[in-house]
Image (cartoon, rainbow, N blue to C red; front, top):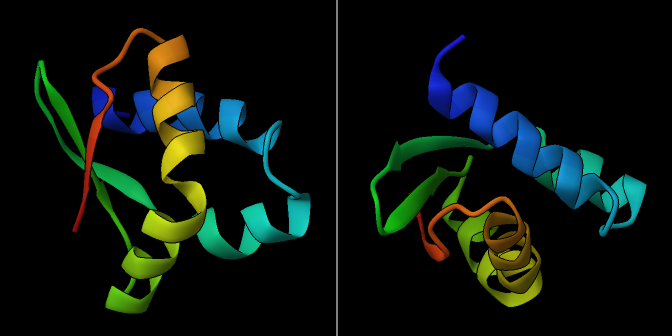
Length: 78
């Protein structure tokens, strides 16, 4: 596995403790890190609709998990 995959698995483990299981399974199933720099993480999502939903419902959970893992907390979706 590559570093982004391993990193995202760790983030997902953290998120799974904060988000209702059914929501987590539905929304995070087809996600991944497509790019990561020293200042930001770009998360790949399956659709534009998913992007709007993540911005509305999950961005703070994601940022909190990234911060806890000492990763960049600027997040973009693609």
